Every structure is written in structure tokens, then in C-alpha cells.
Length: 281
Image 1 (cartoon, rainbow, N blue to C red):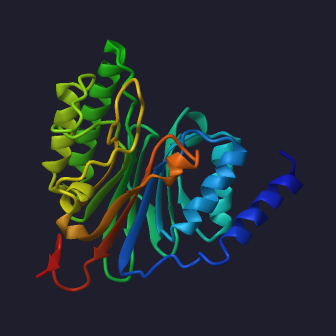
Image 2: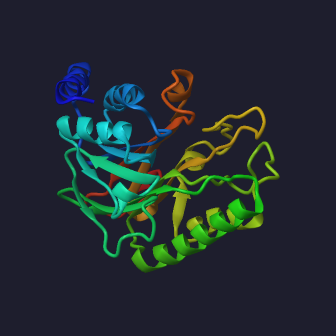
């Protein structure tokens, strides 16, 4: 793509966002987690316009690639005032997770994750710091090799989390696992997948969607062959703040922006007294 065309696409993103530049108050994180499904530049532009319209101040973008489309998303978000954070090695890998914030200070966590699929960032406002991990888990390829790769990744990730865990913690992204009592039942998922999900909850995290929708039946990835699956998650500790809202936006699938639904989570950050999910004490 030549420079004039690229700048034109950047201008197009800015024009589309004229009425959606409000990133939201700094007393809350408005987190949008979306698997962008390795876009080409044209679809990347549409994804950027959609992201801006959500008025989120924190974006977790999974299945990013260091391709023309992936770089276009990063450049457009930067042009819109977002700070983009990419993990070490992202330029030389197949997939990575990007975190973008607007109006919030972002600092990479050290040590960094063992794989560019993991992006650990400390988000700081005037009142608090929340440690955010954006994660793109390995896809369930329905084969023994796929199971081995997932198990190894999951175990290493739980070990990494045990080393960098802090009370105010949020994990968001396409984890490529489902909860143990997922409906419909999906035989392709194995015990280690469920153990990984429950291992995250054992860190003191709450499944934001499930907390607010105890009987909710949303799925974020739908396939007639492999079944409807809730693969994308937002997990929040009580110390991070109050889970004010959490819902899947299925327009990203219906409008062919991605093969995944987006997950929008609003976290009311604590300021002063301790915060618990649903109320302050």
C-alpha cells in the first residue's frame, strides 16, 4: 500500500469517529475484547471504525498478525489517540495480542509473557492500577497435537500468572476454552481445558459475563460442525472494581467483521474504599 493510500485510510478512520471520541470517564475501564480474525487492510479499517464507535477506553485485540491489516489497526488507533502496547517479539510471530488504551497510562509488565499471544499491561489512573492480561489461547484443533499444545500453554500461563498476580487483576480475550458446564456439551474439550478455566477462577477472578448473567446462553463463536462456543472471556478480581456491565456484541459476526462476537465489559474502578462485585463497602 502506498503512503497516500495509507494516509487516506487513516483520515477515513478519523472522520468516522468524529462523534465517538469520548473514551469514557476515568473512574471506569470500558474493555472491549475482540478476536479480529487476522484481517486484511479493508476489513481492518471496518474493524477500527467499529471499535471507535464502542467508546471503549481499553481494547484487547486477539488473533492479531504483524501483517498489513494488523499494522493498519495499530496505526489507526494511534492516530485516534490510543496508546498501543504489543508484546515482545510481535513482529516476528504469527499471532499476537495487542492492548490499546486511551486516557489511561499503560506500562508493560515485567517479566513479559512467554508467548506474544500474552500481553500483560498495568493500567493506571489517578486512583488505582489494574493489571490487565490480554490472552489469545491456542485454538482447539480437535487433534492430539492440538491438545498437547493447549495443555502446555495453559500450564505455562497459570505458572506465569502465579508469578505476576496482583490483587487488582483483569484477564480478557479469546481463551479458546469453555466453562465446565458449558451448554451445549462439547466433547472436543478435555479435562485440562476445564482445569485451566477453573484455575483462573482460583486466582480470585470472577467470570464477568457469568456473574451478571447466571443463566445466560450467549456464544461468541458459532460453527455448524463444531458447535456454538463461548470462547471469549472477561475475568475480573473484586479488588479491580465493580463489574457494572458485561455483554457480547454479536454485530461483529453478523456484519462480517470477525468470526467472533466482541465482549464488552465495564469495570467501575475503586476510589477510596474497597470495591466488591456489585457494591462498595
